[in-house]
Length: 423
Ligand code: NIG
Ligand code: FE
Image (tube, helix red, strand yellow):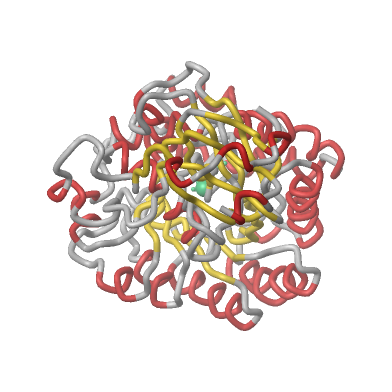
């Protein structure tokens, strides 16, 4: 009871989806025995916050309300979940790819557009021309859209600069967004996203630039938390990605990979063998070659928005990932080319409708599994004592509604580091 009397803020009469001791990871589809068995549900609870962390969770029957300072009661009733975590975005960029969308619907494939100098490179041209302030102003409304749905942590990648100066510029903007808004931003250097036009005839020389200049500078200036690659025919070869991973490790940066999005180059296995936090996309991942991913505890990040927007038909090997016990995260991949969709709730819905995740797996995918994909602490993305007080209070009847119903406002409070902020 003292934990509640001394708290900075208290919420009462809550139903909690703690996502702790949740069955959502492997074997869910077979072990799920009832409507409310998962989600780590605890009903009729009170929750207290102190110094930006969850300081106490207790059943209402143990709470004597008469002893609580009423001024500290911040909410009553409703469902509380951890804050949502969008663990894969390309939020910072300039320009638009609406015409490319038009072109694709006239029949030109995504890879063809890229090979003709459009696609990622058209965004690179616009991003290079933009100032830091312009990039910040363009990213802000995208960020607000994600926040308004309950995102409290997101990852932002570079990758539309492809010069030392422009990659660092993008990363600085990402860091500034995290300082200006009540949200945690993790940054990822994606220098190896596409071949810079200046290196058109020598992609190894471009990889030299990534390894010898971009990674050291991003690390020294503390602008990147991780390093990512696009391992693909229109991106970089496994050998080149391996060089990038090695350089990242030399600078103690975490590793991630865009792998098996359009073809199977075994980039996921390669990234995992370097200890990758996550491998992302995975439509062409070989269901019979998951061992390195299992052994390294690498998270499989599913990006149903890109699958949908590219009209992809090959599904990631979801059941094999599930059977192998590989944690699955879900993210927006927000970007101008393959996923101009700033809604993590929509991604949860698509993960269910397109990839056949359960709503519980989808919520795990945007909470504690997404936290793992970003290398956050083990209690991140869960409602447990000691965890960061990033929480959402919803007007819903059950947490499965978060993946089920789209477009109807249901978020009553967004709480970041213990403070109610921005809905
Ligand atoms: O995650 N796959 C590579 N990168 C992005 C797309 C980038 C773009 O088309 O601008 C992705 O899908
Ligand atoms: Fe991406």
